[in-house]
Image (cartoon, rainbow, N blue to C red; front, top):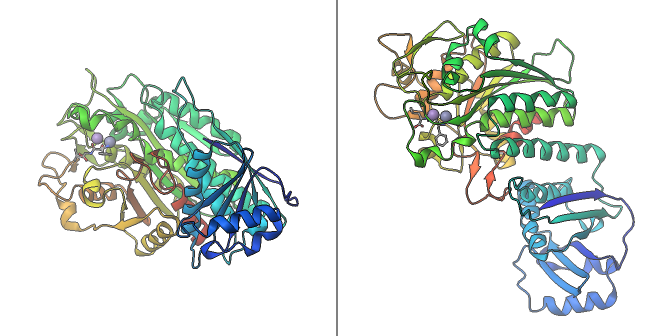
Length: 485
Ligand code: BES
Ligand code: MN
Ligand code: ZN
């Protein structure tokens, strides 16, 4: 469903079509007497006597053209409850099948600032669907006019929500695209189009990467008929001297596993193995749309992990951009190879305040945390705390996992400086993170988010209807707003 929200800031028409009203706890409707007709008021009062007042929404069909929805503002709501309420309301209008609604902001009286903004934000996030490849599209377009003169959402806040929605939807679009469409060549092209949003985009193609010595990244992509890329996306919302915040993402457009081939059942999901990069891209788009007052840079490594006569072999040894050599024992542990070069490059070129990387890096993090928390690995307690707090606020939760030098030892190699999988089993997500840490050369505060369990949802969650979730855009935006802007 496509939902358009128009802010009208006009007075309320009593008899306008489908009306959405907020009422008091337990469906106390005394506050809405003025905005509906007296016969509607007595009709609804009568029906409420036999209604389930525990519901989040009740609706009353007045006639074929007019339904009145009542949504109680319960006590002690927090922001995430309000977003979830908006998302639940989406199911009602989806069921209702009407196209035009009016929401009365005058009734949205809550102690929480921007109550109506969060409600509509939740509704909008939940409404996303990816249907561009359905030849018979469900064309359900819903228009919600926001009228009323109290509880206005300032233009600045409207822009903030819009930026988050567009950023998240861009991430979801990229993650949803199949591997035959969004291969590295096409992905790089789409990123180039972000220039129109005021972002500075620089594309390093295979030839340039060879010159730079990014052989860890290039080794992963060498079996593909597509190119391999590193793309930097800069947003400068502050003066030049302010060090940027850096976000790095794994962009494996498809992960077959390479010669360490994945079984069919594990391979079919691997079109979303570029979700880390897509989150970085969506975040940057969001920052540009809302003109964030910070400097930030997104760096993504785009490759396709394929099998061919030219693909990487188990046992190959490559020299990374950092100068460290890596023995590739398993070609399916490819994300860390892409990130290794991207991390060193980012630290060296941008000298950022911190680096946060995101990657669908290990199946092991799904074993540990399922689809409830992403794994957080970090060399810095302050950055960790900030991330944990932001995650709780926006319902994109993180759980901190350990790093330790004893885990680090497990990736030492006989033949090279390190190997890309550990030589004893266990702690697969941590050893992957230890591998990444070896490519942070100058002690920059760094956090790695393993989002393998979060980027895609089969059955949907509070703020998505299933498919690509866009996990991480809201989280990192919150981190920036709360601690760096
Ligand atoms: N992209 C996968 C991780 C993954 C698995 C993401 C399931 C989403 C869902 C990654 O490249 C991978 O294959 N990791 C291996 C590492 C192993 C070879 C050490 C894994 O987790 O099995
Ligand atoms: Mn893999
Ligand atoms: Zn992968």
